[in-house]
Length: 144
Image: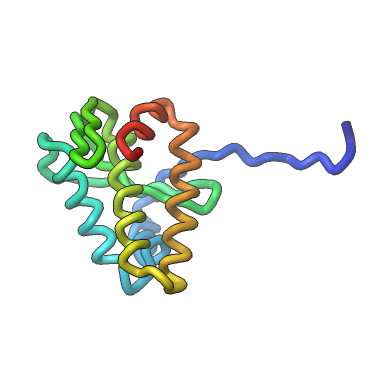
């Protein structure tokens, strides 16, 4: 099968190293929304996970162009009032959930702008990655 075979790059998350952390927020939320985006992610995590009390967060880029933020913690119990979800998941999966909620919120707030289009793309790229995550079923139940 030689006809136009394409090599597929596996979808993966790459931890942002300390040297590039300062570039992360303006790159992925945009310079105008970077502070609001960061604050919203922390706020969504406080809203979703009663036991979350702050802490250090890792930043991840995705090989498809997406990104997410995740706290460096153990497992968290999430409750989503809007859809009745309640369950426990890793902090990594919880970070994906919080980031997806923020991308959706910011896209709604910036509707009709180029920023909105970029946020929607990043939402879909992160949702695509979530489907490959070990906790995909939990993530999808939390966001749907």
